[in-house]
Image (cartoon, rainbow, N blue to C red; front, side, top):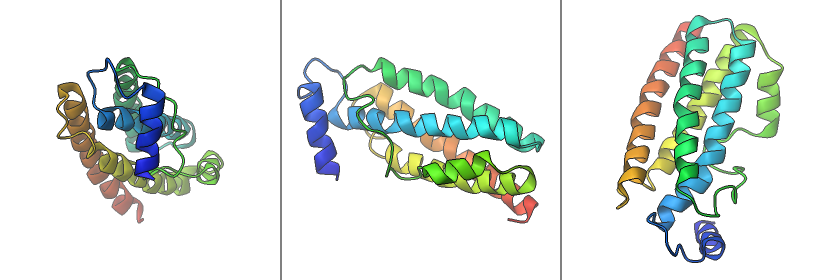
Length: 166
């Protein structure tokens, strides 16, 4: 699958000519943009369906962190952004899982949201490994920032799950 995706990036980007970002940087951005977009959708659902102050604050924090990261990756340029639809990426929720979130409220929603977002964050951390050691400073920093922020949020979400009785 990775070879296919890299081949697609080469084709779409014209072998990366004129870009300061490596192929791994560009592939990371192509995958992380839809990944972050789904996290924002999940956060929006939480802002509507939860009444738990900790969940509401977490959802607002996720939106506040991830939209600027999307904007940053989009600013990297390259035609490959949008070339990946996000399905079958680590941590992505299925359409039916998103629909279940939309149709659930209360403590049950909070548990489903936390479990789904933990899975989602774990996938993002896995993808961030692509760029943590990038030669491109911006890409490496973003990968490191995503990893540290989302690891802290996973720890917080696990604590909330324990408080909710999993």
